[in-house]
Image (cartoon, rainbow, N blue to C red; front, side):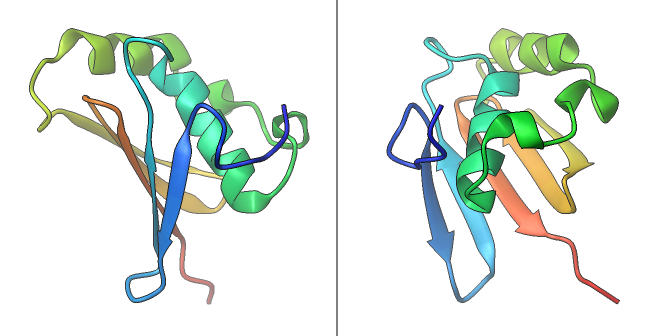
Length: 101
Protein backbone atom coordinates (compact mmCIF):
# COMPACT_ATOMS: atom_id res chain seq x y z
CA UNK A 1 0.00 0.00 0.00
CA UNK A 2 1.19 3.47 -0.81
CA UNK A 3 0.81 5.92 2.09
CA UNK A 4 -1.54 8.06 0.04
CA UNK A 5 -4.48 9.79 1.74
CA UNK A 6 -6.41 9.50 -1.53
CA UNK A 7 -6.68 5.72 -1.02
CA UNK A 8 -9.56 4.00 0.78
CA UNK A 9 -9.19 6.37 3.73
CA UNK A 10 -9.52 10.10 3.11
CA UNK A 11 -7.29 12.18 5.42
CA UNK A 12 -7.40 15.94 5.96
CA UNK A 13 -5.41 18.23 8.28
CA UNK A 14 -6.61 21.25 10.23
CA UNK A 15 -3.58 23.49 10.84
CA UNK A 16 -5.51 25.56 13.36
CA UNK A 17 -6.21 22.63 15.69
CA UNK A 18 -3.31 20.37 14.69
CA UNK A 19 -5.79 17.54 14.15
CA UNK A 20 -5.96 15.09 11.30
CA UNK A 21 -9.34 13.69 10.41
CA UNK A 22 -9.97 10.62 8.34
CA UNK A 23 -13.11 9.27 6.79
CA UNK A 24 -13.75 5.73 5.61
CA UNK A 25 -16.70 3.62 4.58
CA UNK A 26 -17.38 1.28 7.51
CA UNK A 27 -19.37 -1.03 5.22
CA UNK A 28 -16.30 -1.54 3.02
CA UNK A 29 -13.40 -1.31 5.48
CA UNK A 30 -12.84 -2.46 9.07
CA UNK A 31 -12.06 0.30 11.56
CA UNK A 32 -8.75 -1.35 12.50
CA UNK A 33 -7.56 -1.32 8.88
CA UNK A 34 -8.73 2.29 8.51
CA UNK A 35 -6.64 3.32 11.54
CA UNK A 36 -3.53 1.68 10.10
CA UNK A 37 -4.11 3.28 6.69
CA UNK A 38 -4.79 6.71 8.21
CA UNK A 39 -1.71 6.70 10.42
CA UNK A 40 0.43 5.47 7.52
CA UNK A 41 -0.86 8.34 5.36
CA UNK A 42 -0.28 10.89 8.13
CA UNK A 43 3.24 9.65 8.82
CA UNK A 44 3.94 9.11 5.10
CA UNK A 45 5.29 5.67 5.86
CA UNK A 46 4.44 2.15 4.85
CA UNK A 47 2.26 0.46 7.50
CA UNK A 48 4.79 -2.38 7.77
CA UNK A 49 7.17 0.10 9.43
CA UNK A 50 4.73 0.73 12.29
CA UNK A 51 4.26 -1.14 15.53
CA UNK A 52 1.37 -3.56 15.10
CA UNK A 53 -1.98 -2.12 16.13
CA UNK A 54 -2.66 -5.19 18.31
CA UNK A 55 0.14 -4.05 20.64
CA UNK A 56 -2.09 -1.19 21.86
CA UNK A 57 -5.65 -2.35 21.20
CA UNK A 58 -7.51 -5.49 20.18
CA UNK A 59 -8.30 -4.88 16.48
CA UNK A 60 -11.19 -7.36 16.49
CA UNK A 61 -12.80 -5.61 19.46
CA UNK A 62 -12.33 -2.22 17.80
CA UNK A 63 -14.01 -3.52 14.64
CA UNK A 64 -16.91 -5.05 16.59
CA UNK A 65 -17.55 -1.88 18.59
CA UNK A 66 -17.55 0.30 15.49
CA UNK A 67 -19.64 -2.03 13.33
CA UNK A 68 -22.31 -2.80 15.89
CA UNK A 69 -23.22 0.77 16.64
CA UNK A 70 -25.51 2.74 14.39
CA UNK A 71 -25.00 5.68 16.75
CA UNK A 72 -22.21 8.03 15.61
CA UNK A 73 -21.62 8.96 19.27
CA UNK A 74 -19.93 5.62 19.96
CA UNK A 75 -16.15 5.97 19.97
CA UNK A 76 -12.95 4.32 21.10
CA UNK A 77 -9.89 6.36 22.03
CA UNK A 78 -6.33 5.09 22.43
CA UNK A 79 -2.67 6.02 21.91
CA UNK A 80 -0.88 4.74 18.83
CA UNK A 81 2.43 5.80 17.30
CA UNK A 82 2.73 8.88 19.53
CA UNK A 83 -0.76 10.06 18.56
CA UNK A 84 -4.13 10.16 20.28
CA UNK A 85 -6.53 8.27 18.03
CA UNK A 86 -10.31 8.47 18.33
CA UNK A 87 -12.38 6.15 16.15
CA UNK A 88 -16.09 6.88 15.88
CA UNK A 89 -18.66 4.54 14.54
CA UNK A 90 -19.89 5.77 11.21
CA UNK A 91 -16.41 5.97 9.67
CA UNK A 92 -14.70 8.91 11.38
CA UNK A 93 -11.19 8.97 12.84
CA UNK A 94 -9.37 11.86 14.49
CA UNK A 95 -5.64 11.73 15.07
CA UNK A 96 -3.75 14.27 17.15
CA UNK A 97 0.00 14.10 17.82
CA UNK A 98 0.81 13.82 21.51
CA UNK A 99 2.57 16.90 22.86
CA UNK A 100 6.31 16.50 23.30
CA UNK A 101 7.89 17.48 26.59
